[in-house]
Length: 148
Image (cartoon, helix red, strand yellow):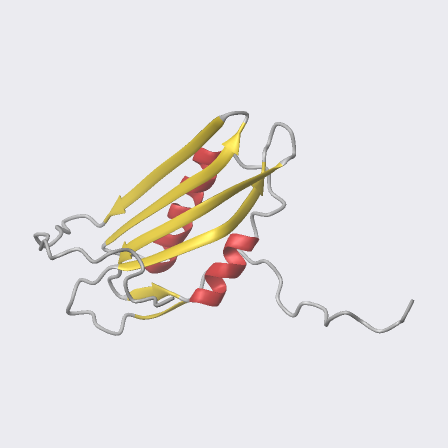
């Protein structure tokens, strides 16, 4: 067997520190949608891993969440025992504290465990903020811009 490394040691570590950057267009309400398909935490009862897709939707006010810090933040739950409801609300609370958005929704879709799928949705709305009326446009097929 060779003594050669199969790769370098990771240079990043999980972190609860959420960094932000200035909203590039404070005069317009725009929707930021993120999908985090590799979220993991531990079941607080059994210690077994729980897997989820986290969907983050928000309308920023003064700040947006920085992507690398969000990835490291999500990674920080990997070794923590968390009830699905508690971790979804904790993610929302931490992101709201960091960004102070006009609106934010965290949707956590946990994979099946014991025959049960769990979806948890938590929302924040800034006091006094009202969304613009929705404009219905023609819908495009899913992945319509992918050729193959």
